[in-house]
Length: 257
Image (cartoon, rainbow, N blue to C red; front, side, top):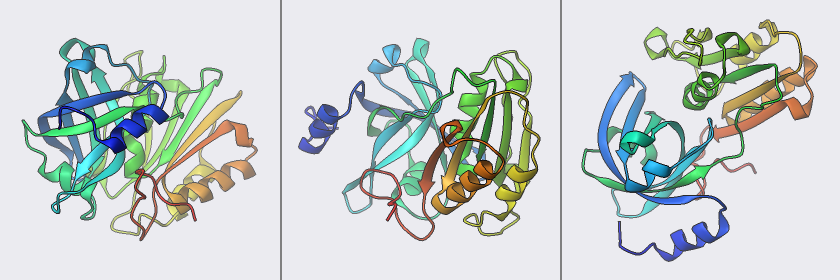
């Protein structure tokens, strides 16, 4: 990365509050499931970098043509003591983000800006429902892991098959119970499996909060299903990460036209 930020980066830093510019160096890259790549990076600023569970980094992902594309990826965890940050990225398609995740080598550098994102754990909620596809896993697990006890969370996550499942624990050391749905090669942009599961899942008593993430149309269908179950709009946080058949916009998120 250049010694001075580009004009575009400088404009972003002026517009965004409370973010840090990071010259991230890749330390390691490993496939934690057949479809999920964990990239671990370091930067001096990470020794004092803080984020809330569910927030993300905006990365300047390079392309083979030399240009870069802004893409946002959830911060899976931060290790301040060792100045490390872990980012889990779904490897799908041949877009710039997936290509970088599959080819990033130790010693390479990438520009990051963060933390970004307003959706995090609602401290007033008695329980928390996390729903989404593969792209929702990093944020869902990061937020559920931050809760005091495993029974505060309900997770409904769709992956292609059993090999794509992950395990995690709440702060009490208990394993998080995840309702894993398997597509088995079906279209990940179809809302059928997730909507059916959300309509049927048992929800704890008391005021809760739902966090929905994944494909834009699927997230909209899930939101409608939860409204029909009696949740209010204020109890639902929705975050589309991608849109079927359409590349994400320059700011790293799907267009909502």
